[in-house]
Amino acid sequence: MFKYFVQKRLEKYVKKYFAKHPEVRLIVVTGSVGKTSTKVAIATVLSEHFRVRLHKDNHNTNMSAPLAILGIEYPKSVKNIGEWLKVFKAARKRISDSTDVDVIIQELGSDRIGQVPHFGTYLQPDVAVVTAVSAEHMEYFHTMDVVAAEELSAANFSKQAIINKDDIDGKYARYITNANINTYGTDVNAEYHFISMEYTVKNGHTGLYYAPEFSDPMPATIQSLGEYTLRPVIVAIAIAIKFGMDTPQITRGLSKIYSLPGRMNRLRGINDSMIIDDTYNSSPLAAESSLRVLYQLLVPQRIVVFGDMNELGETSVVEHEALGRLCDPNQLAWVVTVGEQAEKFLAPAAKKRGCQVKSFQNALLAGAFVRGILEQGAVVLFKGSQGGIYLEEAIKEVLHSSDDESQLVRQSPDWMVRKNEFFSKFS
Image (cartoon, rainbow, N blue to C red):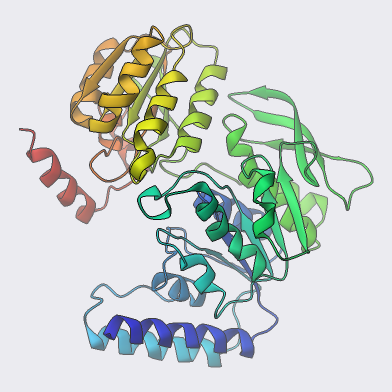
């Protein structure tokens, strides 16, 4: 009851804030994967011209999103009434003060049916970005149609929306009622799209950006590892164009975009190897995309470490088997798995294709194994989920320098206590 009261009070403050400051534009980002990377890319480009507010972490729930919008820190003790009274006071001050931002960018998350539509009861964003419709939290959503209806609902309560054409099947358009829609992606049929003319690991993609507002395409260089990570940048450019930014401003913004920890982030490994750290979370679409990036790299040895893809419900068996079938023995020296689902279903499918496969109960053992097989100049992709997997700890076994551990996800004291307790079960 108390939590419900707090949530409603926060939502009321957000409504009052936008009523008092109608000049502040709100961008929301939702979708099955890629929300945080997309949010940060948009903020990085827009910051070349606008004052931008966003929370860099994934504060995207019914309780945390209103605070992120208002720029107020989430209280350390959620059961402490005094802490919430301080929050309410800060919210009232935020409403009454002159605005300190031009644009707010907010991520909207969902792990239950109805959570994204609920945001529409108190928000009317200027722009909604929908990054993908793919398998997520399937123990609650059960079908892809339910996922699509959930994520695309953001388009319907926003003034306009821009939707990823690459990762959202056109058949789900039936869930969109808003006529003010654009698409983005690497698909040439998207209104906002980028065509890569040249790609190198060092320099990223050089190519041409097409937009309805341009009579001629805009030359652009995007620092991105593979095609999949282009998409957050493509939509960031689209919104910058819609908000009236010029080409020099956009170009400066592009030069400042960086990979986030645990999201296709490149790290230096032992033996002059390269580590692709994609350990923040895992889903079928994201895992397949990161694997295809690995295949594009011309190196003497490729190794992939897959952890369980959590929260897939009844689809878990099918999705893990499908990912295993994508493992190509001609491209991969080793497929290493961590977790029960990956061992039971992904590993046998990869073995059937002819891959060398090794399975482990935990990330620490997997990391030690990879350290022993890593050749000079190799690339290792670590792709895993959060709960019970924690592949970022495997990465520590093959980092060139322990100084780079600060670039890994979930390294706070609280997280380390939690993970140490988890790994102690295996000792």
